[in-house]
Length: 340
Image 1 (cartoon, one colour):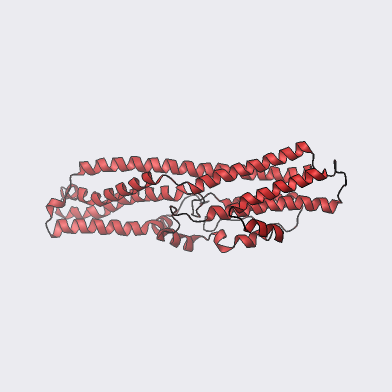
Image 2 (cartoon, one colour):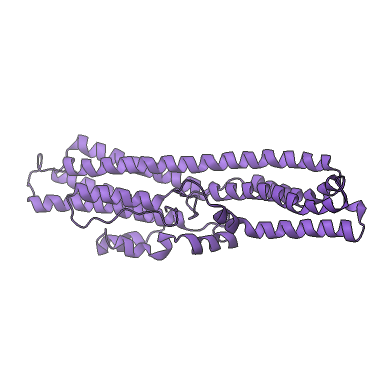
């Protein structure tokens, strides 16, 4: 997530410069053929190109609206995860008590139960986060401009450390072995939480109502995980994305040929203005397309993602402080205005 006021012009040009090079080549070739070789037949009336541009604008607008909806839904899901995680932390601390226990636990043992339930939740966040960062065929982070931008502007935390290293901070070796042997690690961690709650119920450390409330929170976590997985695993429909891409390429190719005679009307030498103006128009459309691409997959690891790493760290800080722990990690700060 970009946390600054605006992207700088330098960042925008760095991100889109390959498109600009292509626009320059197309415009220069069209103008040179028209001017130097006298290929007047190559000039196209502006009206049909304008009609194509209108259709492209509608398609781009439709895609960008749908992409924004996907990102906003993802942000709402993770906002709910933050709120429910805080509820989990305070309910674990206040609900798991010796009040109904047949064999009351010492305070240190009771605090250990609180710690295990809380740290296991942090393990769930880590597992879910790593699963959401896994690449998909339709995502854009493997494209050259995104690879370059990520190397120069920000780093992806989930690429810098492994899930195993993170889980080791929160799970016992036995639980780690059980979780890592499964495909959907986040789902299995919630299963461990449920089993733990059943054990506490059997011991009388929680009673039926409190057990039900805690189980409702686990169900809510599954719901939030399901929303995130649906957005991650179901792309913006490929038929819309494909036709959008083809129409934009067609429009970009036609733009300079439609401007040739328009600028020639101003004078013979003004025809060379076709190059900067067609580049500008083409750049607007291709950049809008890129914005839609970078918004439609809010967990892929781009600069426009939902900042799930920073949100997870915020949750970790809150829950550790609820446990009165002393080793509290620092909150994540933006790097070059990018918060991951």
